[in-house]
Length: 103
Image (tube, rainbow, N blue to C red; front, side, top):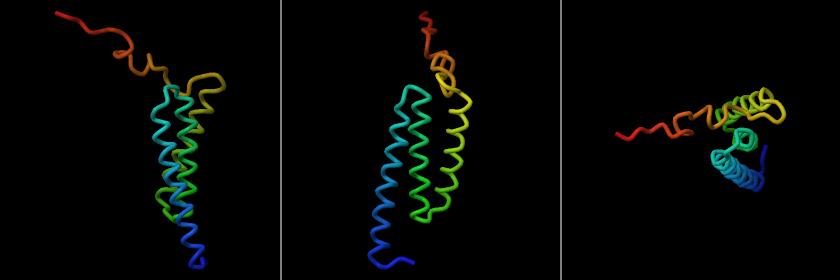
């Protein structure tokens, strides 16, 4: 299927795509907006699917296909202009207000 030079070239491209996917996933975790987190996470998952196909890493492909579907589903459910999940005050009520009591 591959000639010697083609296989090495494909492996290098796959590795580069894998690193880009990893960077996108890490970047998504720094997002404050759930919509941005899901969009960047979706890009990372699609890159991981591409990496998995090139590297013939089928568990990576399956996992990131499911992850992509979850991101798309949540983005669609949120609709335009809505957050793709609970707001920070809904998700972390104890951390969003000063509830600490001092004896």
